[in-house]
Length: 384
Image (cartoon, rainbow, N blue to C red; front, top):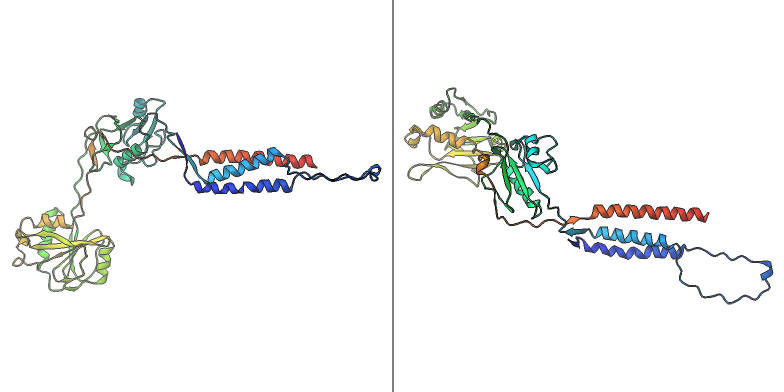
């Protein structure tokens, strides 16, 4: 255990130790001479030299100690190496609390893998999908904040949620234990097909058939609507803007607020600086380019939407390609079989933070202050 000061300049406050010394010199017990009639005729003796003298030594010592402790508090005392190496057990959401307690033992320090690592005797945390931090990140955090010699046991359900693409690599070898039996695996529902809202100029609706056919290929009940004009659809739909000329500012604002828009080659808009080719033909010629615009995305065809200029419109793959272009990126997988996700060891240990002694020092300062006040009041009471 190594003591240290996090802010050693705070010790400069020790200069205030001179204050109680001056106060005690100023307020020392006064001697009031009293004249006696029988002594008035005696010759006065020479007055002895006055000596530096302090009264109330205990009270002075307490005041000096109080100032020294306050200066030490400003210097922020701490210690390194004051660590608890007892075993810890953490359980992932989905583990039955009773089963976890039976595995860990009645006296074990058992906590949930959740923000703040609450005790398992409290309410179970929400699933990882409903919290900002993920299970894998929280396991790494708990391992990093644990003393190097402390054993760690991790209880997980058969299917672990909240993981990321990186395999767990911790600073210690842990006990990875699966608690519970596998639950029946549910078949995930397919994502809904995109909803297309086409806007075109009056008399220029020839490309509509390609987008209508694509929407029909996506679902038995196509989510497709088209209108001549500039009415904006709800933000959950994909806007297909085929009107030539400058794109209205309202459309740009709609995209920036989180919408997705596909523009014809005749639409005039300042493409984002991060635009990149998104679809190219066999020869490498760009067919669609796009990129993020504010919180949304904008895509633009690089060729006129006629089969003579873009034969890919008649390709059987056009519907699937268009769906991949307008659909939001799929989230990375966050579920894994726990038996295949056991962490490895060998990660570099993190430097542990020193333990701040300020709370303990504040208690001592309070006790010394109360003792000083009691002595000061007692002194005044006896002086009356």
